[in-house]
Image 1 (cartoon, rainbow, N blue to C red):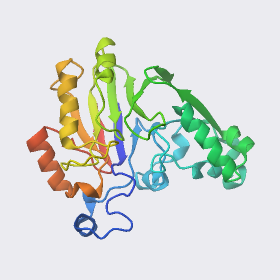
Image 2: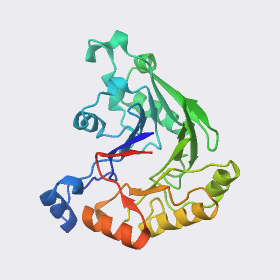
Image 3: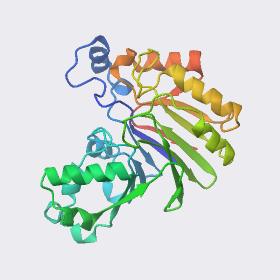
Image 4: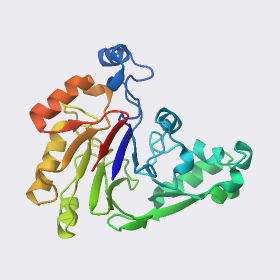
Length: 282
């Protein structure tokens, strides 16, 4: 599988839009890997995870087109992971190619789908037009779904309560990605399911919104939390020494530049640090 990290930040991005903290100023000055946009990942150029407000710029920056996207996995409904503006962009007056559009399939929880329709109605969007070009497919925890050659299993994230937020295990051709951002430190029920079903993870990608700073916020993890998850998984044989370990989804609250994050992650926790535009092959 080929994995492209299109964005690696939390909602506010780095530098944050209305922030003048030391990290935001330094990130703007340094540029490059220090500039982070809202989290999004693309698998094999066709399977997209999340559709936040930076989606258009991600695809333009990567020299790619959304025309190639047939399936989108939505972790939860926070606006950095789901924007409804995409719906009206598929209306017939927005493109001369409308009649050639394939149906775009969005896979997410029933609760998110219900919220989509509530917001669409409140905005006065045309339901019939939305249904003409998009299909919403509900998923449930621990129930694998076959999607164009991938087996995708949604797992429970500790985030966006009371909504059913998802982590995703994505498998194809004997390889697997555990995409696990936007969650607090989760319990071992996930470990048990993975181990009992003989799962092996080739890329473990975990939330690191807090960086190496511990805060009480329940919905995100720190470097220390991610290392603890990796240790749990390794003890059960879910990962091994060949598994690629990456932190992603950073906030400016982490207070570290990319180089500082990278050094701390590697030296203290044995992890790598994802950045916008990073490409991996597993």
